[in-house]
Image 1: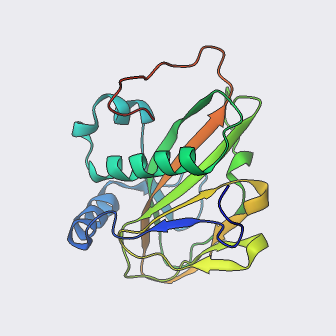
Image 2 (image 1 turned 90 degrees about the vertical axis):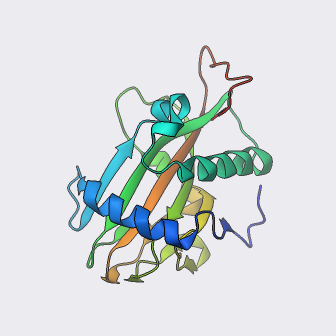
Image 3 (image 1 turned 90 degrees about the horizontal axis):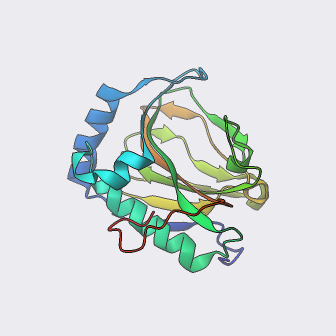
Length: 198
């Protein structure tokens, strides 16, 4: 497990700045209001299955590199307790001025047919830098991070690592959120030899 002095791992420049600018425009054009709804939020989702089966059809194929970096990082640095580790969900996210994400843990996610035990491994791939506020913070560790375009931050999204996003005070905070999960599957999928094992 990563040293507790660092509750996350940050990789810079996963996507070049000029490409981030183009992706940000496309996410803003595609995003719909949040389903919760939460004021100031909009997003669009991509099915993990679609990413595995036809990544060349993605609007932003660069996220495949980010997913692969994160997948390898989590497997190399965390002990998986269950027999399946896979990409769960990917979505583009926009937080407008005035929005915030209150402290939470990703293991507490609720949805139909959720496994009894599901451990989340979380990532944010930042797409823009031209916003104020919006720092990602880790409640129990007194740590906060101002992410910039091209940054990929990876962390365990559990109750021991409660996290949130401070209020965006100017501009829009645009990113991709990537969720992986570790859980028990009765008949694990065999992805041996697959280009994308996640």
